[in-house]
Length: 416
Image 1 (cartoon, rainbow, N blue to C red):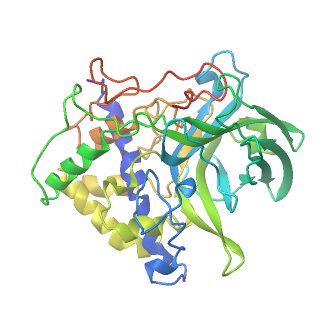
Image 2 (cartoon, helix red, strand yellow):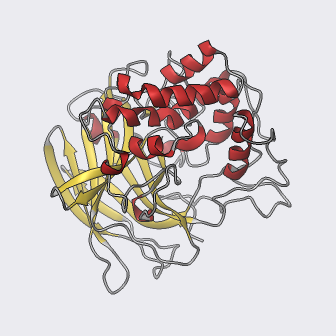
């Protein structure tokens, strides 16, 4: 069983909003977008965070899975001070030894706001954007890409290539780029999916709590199943100096989220089809599939819209079914919008390391942080503290366990 402290149980607030972020889906109405859900995004490109909304068809290379943001020295003590690592994982359930590519018709973007202090309300302002655009793969299976940094309306671009499976995985392509006369390091290619969760059993537990299935608990550690074990993801890993995103300010606290936008040829513009901030499973608290799909199309600035009430009511119902009082359910819903990943770079990174005055995590997320255990503990007010799955796995249980992280950039484990 994984350890759990009462103090850090509050961190589950992230989960409710990583899941409750779909509240904002309905705020599309307030933004004047078409009411019909199917008109929000083309069905062929509607995506999800580890599949948090189902449509008839979807391109998995447009699916976000997880966002990680951390100080590099907290992962590698030999790293340079003030360098930050951003990780965007896409294309969930990528099979072992099979090549997958990034979409050539999409924008993959990290978006960053400068924050006055760790207690400030997120603004969703796009102070800095790191935008990736990929070309068709060449004869070696490499995809050339362009990284454009848009900071305070100034643009700077440089180009690199991805690492295909044909390249020795112990010697990946590391792109050392020059953006605004600032060194930026990029890896793009397949890596093992670091996320871990007995998601199948979670849905059984949730169904029981909602009265639509038998009441069950999580499986013991020797039987629990990590649904991401053995799968790869397409990863974009970026090393940036803090000065690049601080600009001409003294900012040391930042809000980060990531999006994927797809070219809508009917309008000739890119249309956002994915968004992800804090870690968690979006479908954890919101049951209605249309709400899950709709959230992916909106920015954090829409998160506090009054039009989000129908989705909020559904999430609140789930929270109450899991044993939370009205007051506690409202507090969980109030703490995490707008949905962004906050990192205070003055202190060590780690999802459960620190909270702000509102009870929200403010120290980013490292690759092996057990965000689900934190989530479950707060979601159930301490009644459930673990799904009994860990990154390294349980001895004797072949349904758990990930490969060791590599010691140097890009840090994620080698692909399966």
